[in-house]
Every structure is written in C-alpha cells, then in structure tokens.
Image 1 (tube, rainbow, N blue to C red):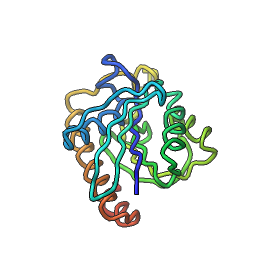
Image 2 (spheres, helix red, strand yellow):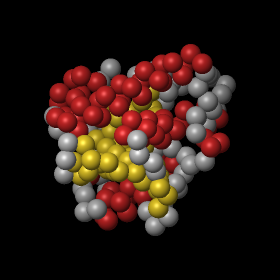
Image 3 (cartoon, rainbow, N blue to C red):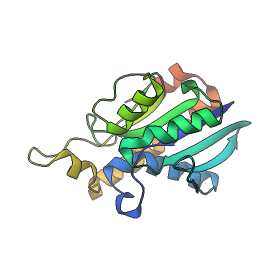
Image 4 (tube, rainbow, N blue to C red):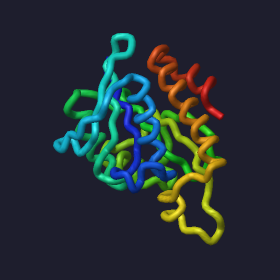
Length: 189
C-alpha cells in the first residue's frame, strides 16, 4: 500500500506561516517527526519526501505551483506511482470553520477553495480523503485574499498548533487502522 499525503499551500518563505499554508505546515510537521527532508522535483512541480509507516510507503507532497494549480502535482504523482484517488489524502485550510477546528471528509465540493477546485477539475471527481483545518473568516471589511495570505494572530497560533497535532494524530491513526469511519468519529470536531 502507498499513500500520497498532499498539503496545500503556496511555495516560498513569504507564505510559510500564512493561513492558506496550513497544508504545508502539516506535512512539514510530519516530515519533522519522521526526520525526513523534502526534495524539489521539477517534473512533478512539487517538493516530495517519503517514509515507511508499518510497511506502507507514504509520500508527503507540497505542490510548488501555487495554490490555484495544485492539481498538476497531484495528478502527475498519482499517475506516476499508479495510485488512485483512494490513495490520496489532502490537507488544507477552510474559511468556513472556526480557527483550529478539524474535519475529515471523503468527498464534497471545493467550498470556494481554488486548490481543491483545480484538483477536482483534473481528477474529474471529488471522492478523496481530506483533512480540513478551520482558519475562520475575515473581518467584514477585510478581503478574503488578504486574510488567507495573512499570518495567524498569537491566539490563533495556539489553536492552530493544537489543530496540527490533532490532524497529525488523525493521519497516523488512519494510516495504522485504515478505518475511515473510526478516524472520522475520533477526529472530527
């Protein structure tokens, strides 16, 4: 068994700690736990790292195409490794959930998320596992792009740190059990 764990975000240090880079932050966190480093692969337009967990090969992926073209890396890597959408796990930010809230889903719409829209467009369906991490909504007069590309407040960083631990635990739980229903029961909310 092989899994492709893709964190969505934008490349470059300028975006590293922004709300929109929650997916990158999570796969970076897992890479740190596994003591592995990412290598840029220009063919796949992604940074990729891999490790084995209980005999299963796990690829951690950070697309380098910027958010709106994330599907290019996802589609190419799935094809290259002979994987299907059942082997895909996406991690990304969600404006419609409170900061730090975590939700695991197996399908659904893009919910306005351009990275997810692109992936759904290229794969032709929305049936893939996803960990969504809430980043909250901007203030009424603040634009969505400025909000998602802004950094978390100190208070939000605490909630996000807890959320990243929760997603990491959920990811490992799912990798160990392959029990989607149990993972959803334990980690949604």
